[in-house]
Length: 81
Image: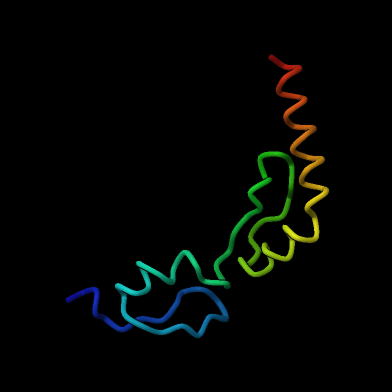
């Protein structure tokens, strides 16, 4: 079966190997080397195209910045209504 084919992760620096089925079901979205953007990008955060591992650190380090961005963005939306 196609899902049994042996594959390697496509993300740079990731050494994961397994079946295509495992990759699609479990690894692809959870790979720490996958490039992501900050979930607060729509509020003005410019953190993007970094690894998932870097995002976890960014979210911890910039939590107060994100609260401020979210509050500012929400207030702006209320004023514009």
